[in-house]
Length: 241
Image (cartoon, rainbow, N blue to C red; front, top):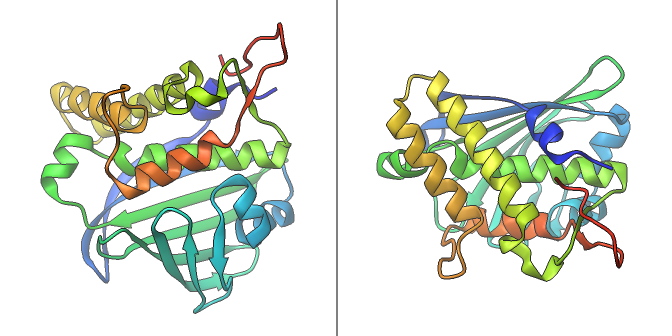
């Protein structure tokens, strides 16, 4: 079964600045490999039925110029598409300005490589509070969900109904938040700044019982990933440690 910590540790993360139609944006970039064919990964990323199984139910037209909508107030347009190589999306989350998502595929040594870059115009106060993990953790969850889908696996947990409060989910969001904190530190942020964004991001994705996330992307990506948690057999144990 999948070792969740190993999967999250296999992701290469970095951050950058890039200009998009909405203005000067901040980018989060993730790169990781999948033990699946290029054709299989492309199909999982572009087939409506498959997307609905590993991420969220989606409606719309999957072609250049096509508009789509995910369950959870996420919608967008396909700006560019080169089959088996890349696609670019204009994505709107709630009432925010349109951001841009570029997904590139390539052949690795016995694996298919995905590089995903998400650029958005970000309020500086929001960045100071949550940093790159606000979006980066959501993409970590999505790409991990894609891995589970391609392997036909799930995360076994003692209590799937615990959802965002389950030990399995809180541990993986904490791991991802720390990974994005390390990326921010490498980009020149101070240790104090990093500590703040790691704590706040982890709490938003896996909030205490008295706190609930208010950002559309966080709610949607969390809800999508929680569908991958399944109950452990009676007397069994979790495979997510």
